[in-house]
Structures are given as C-alpha cells and as structure tokens.
Image (cartoon, rainbow, N blue to C red; front, top):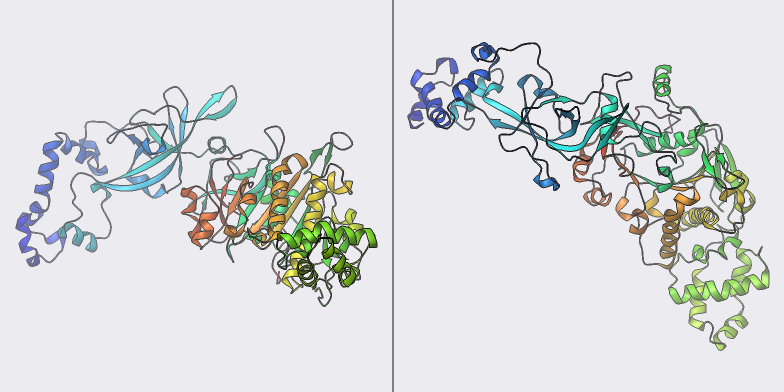
Length: 620
C-alpha cells in the first residue's frame, strides 16, 4: 500500500486507475487472506452471481430461504442468553428484507424448527475489499451503488422457542437444541407458526396487529396480518383483564385512541364472565371510566370510518361502533358547570354524600393531616359525630359540630384529643363544602345506574377546576367500588356480583406514591384491590403519561403493560419492559406500541388500528 503515495495524480475515477494503483489496492490485502484460506479464490468467485457458473457446485432449482446458519464463529445454544451464539449469513438478494425483530425459522432434521428473531445485523468484510482505504472510499463516493459481493451480511439471532408437532397441533417449548451449520433459514410467514412461536392466543381481546420495525407482519394466509389478543378465558388461567392493564404514552402518542379501542372490546355483546352469585351465571362486565379530559363519553357515538374498514375489523372479530349503553355520570360541584356538546351520551348528575366519609376518613384528609390528626378524625371525631347526628348527617353539620368549644374542652381534658390536634383537624377539614351534599341525587342511591352489566359509565371531571375536589370525587367513587368488591358483607350486591373494569385516565394523579396519610390509605386500598382482583372479577385499567409517578405497590400488580411513544427516560425506565422493547419506545410513531404481558405472550411490537372504533376528538 506504500505505492499509493501518488494517489493525488489519479483523478479518482475507477475506470482510469493505473494498473499498478489498482493492483496495489488489492494485492497486499488479498495475499494475506489468500495465504490463510487456500480456497479463498474459489470462494471469491462464488460470491458473485455472474461468476457462479465458474464454481464447481452446479445450481439446481430455485433458492429457498434468506440464507444459512454460519458456524464460522461458533454455533451455540446456551442456558445463559449471553453465551448463545446464532448467526446467519444473509444472501445478497435478501438483505433488504431483514430487519431487527424479523421472525425467522431454522428447521431441524427431524421436522422440528427453531423459531427466532433477528437481534442484530452487521456487515463483515468478505474477500477483496478493505473499505478503509482512500481508493475504496473514493470509488464508493463516485459509483452508482455498492458492490455487496465485497461484504457479507450477518444476522445475529435470538432463539425464542422450538416448534414441534403434537398430533394435529403445533406446540412450542424452550430452546433446548442447536440447529446444524448451513441450515437454511427462512422468514416465518405462517400465522400458526408465528402465533405459536410467540405464544399469542388465538382468541381473546383484540389489541392491535403484530408488527416489526413499524410495519405489520405479513403472512401467506388470509387475512395476511396477525391479530394480537389478550387471553380472556378460564380454560388456560384467569382472564388477564382481572390481572390489570397499564397503557402508557406521551401527549400525541395515541394512548386515548388505543384505550378506547381496547375498552370497546370489553363492551362487546358476547363478552361475559362467570360469577358465583346465584349459581354459575355468565355476566357481561361493567366499565367505569374516570375521565379527567372528558373524552370517553364519546364512545356512545360511532367512529369516523368507512364500510371497508368496518368489514376488515369484523373479519378480525373486533367490536366497533358507538356503544349505546353509555352514561356520563357528572359530579355536581358548586360553581362548576358541565358542557356536553361533544357527545350524545345521557348525563346523570350525582353528589358525594358526606356519609361516605365515615368509612373513608381520608377523603377529607388530603389537606395535610399527620398521623395523630388523622387518628383523632377517624377514631374520635367522626364516630362521635355519627352517634350524635346519625348516618345521614351532612358536611355542614360536621363543621358545625367541630365549632362547639365544649366538645374541644371535653376531649382535651379527657386526654382523648389534645386541643392543638383538635384545632388542626377543625382547620384542615374545611373547604369541602362545594363537594359534599350538593343539589343532586347521592351516588349511593344511583348504584344500579352507576354499575350496569354491559354498560359504560364515564365520570368526567374536566369541568371541575379545583384539584382537591376532583381527587375527592374520583377517590370516593373508586373506593366505593373497591370496598364493595372486596367486602364479604357488601351493601350493594350489584357491584359485588358484576364483573367490573375500573378505568382511570391520568392515573398518576390519583395513585401516586407520597408520604401523606391520604396517599398511603389510597395506595393500600388499591394494592389490595389489585391483589384480589382476579378472585373478585375486578380489573384495573390505568392510563398515564407519567408511569414513574404511579406507586410501586400498585405498579407491581400490573400484568399487561402497553407502551406507546414516551420521550422521558425516567418514564421509559419506569414501565419496566425488556431492553429490546425499551429501545424502540422513543422512536415509535402515533399508534405504534409495544406490549409486555408475560402470562400472555412473548414481548411484541404492535400497530393499533388506524381509526378509532368509536367517536374520538372534539372535532370528529
């Protein structure tokens, strides 16, 4: 290569290269590789299609697959993922079809197959080129294309499962054997092979279509796409809806669109679950959706899509169209008015009765009560108030009760409540007069309307500008549902006996991990609900753009995590998905998502439906 000092005299045109320069650009490199590989010349000839006839292997028939497994650097299956080595040589004509995440199959001689995904792709130097030289760089810059015969494309594979026939059924098991070198590798293009390899159920709740690199996986079947479904029967375990779902995504990622499409499936007419009460009955689930942006009542109305789209989703068994049994349960808050011009769902006003506070004192503890103050409220003041005023007493009566100086003195002298503690409680429980006992029917008298088998109840709070009032309403209703579900002696059998999905948008605002008394009580209640949801037919459906703010005890009970585009590193880290999915999250377009549901399938990438199955957007 030292003879290249005269390169400046050469104008860079490969066609005009002097013979000695041409030779110098290859002789030094070629002599070294040829001396270490005696058959290199033959291999070099074979690497070019136009020289294929010169090679002594006579090609017969048509090429199959995309390439072959290579043992050049070892071919190994190991119990430790880091010790496994599976690499495939991809032939030149197939290189544009291989992407990170592509699903491949490599057969064993006895009919079983290794199902794998592409985890890495790299070019390795082949026979003649040293692409780091000036000559080759200039040639590449001036040529119309790259001669890939000078390089080989190697795909690193991650084994997923071994597929085998069990009678008429295709089944999967852990990867426990290594395929042979030069085994032909092909695209997985059969629906059954892919769904079996990824452990995707063939029935259940539709979430989207399987994808790789933002494009739907195509098969040779009809339809050519693969529907991803969440297991929803008791034959293979509990329905995963009762083991809880989280949808996380940033602003504009399409999380509300995706959430509406999933919730619509739980409202399908044929969606039922067995309940124990009254025998083994099948009951449709009720959905109660807390809606701070007032978007979900639109599910009453039809979506904006054509008949062709409707036929396609029906072919996939997807429920679509507006859901007639949708009610907007509007909390009556003094000074707040609700505008429903963007949907046609029936509105039902209600109020939170102060009587609910007796069982849930923390509803008025959000203003900063410490433990001593909370104990005074919960175990001294509220019980005494109930004894004197009865179960139907109001919030105004309670504040009047606290204004009695004789009560303050009596409790202090008896040592039951110190006067400073009494004063702190009396001061901090004020400010809820616009929330409790408003001019509307109490929620406790509307339970049969609030929870309806097959019905969607939306609780909008967009019109409530007071954050503390919003928290009180949402937590009061959610606690009512959870308490009745978990109770062995429920007050409302309608809640206890109805499969229930509790949806909570902006869940980070209500289930945050904090040190206040209220936060600890809320998290404890919802953690218990999450743990027992499977048994009680209670599912949490949480939607958030800040998953890192959801309390860990609740988060740990989530079985199915759906992640759309997130740009915040803390948020991405918090969703706790496998690294191969985590790296995709910041680059996903609207509607793209990854799903991590270990009890349902391998981690996968999906594309949601391009249209919302119900009305979505204020201008739609």
